Amino acid sequence: MDFMTTFNEVAGAKYPTTYKGKAITPTSGVSLVPSFSGKAVPGHEVIFNEHFQARYARSGDWKLVSGADRNWHLYNLAEDRSETNDVKDQNPGKVKELDGLWQKWATTHNVLPKPGRK
Image (tube, rainbow, N blue to C red):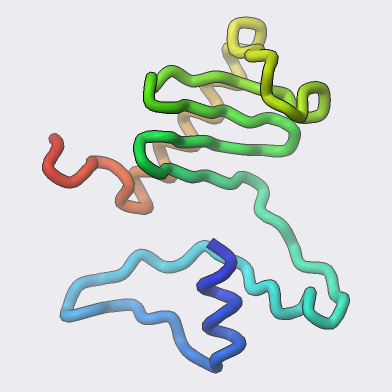
């Protein structure tokens, strides 16, 4: 998500708001250009992704992940960087929180509903 914002800044381009009369979802990226000269770049509080039915939400040390099985799995990356110990059963509140954030992101970024599905 940060590449588009960075490329636009480097090129001196403006991210479009419409295309062929249709609104374009604004980019949520942060330009990485300041980092090219050693300056700090603010990170994202929460990051999301969805690709080929895999999806995730990450906030701090917590990462909620779902693969093709569509079941959520929760990992504490501070304690388990290789994501081998699913702790969703011990942390149902965190699962609910991150799932809600992912659902909101998916709706506001046109990830859901999937094309051709209702």
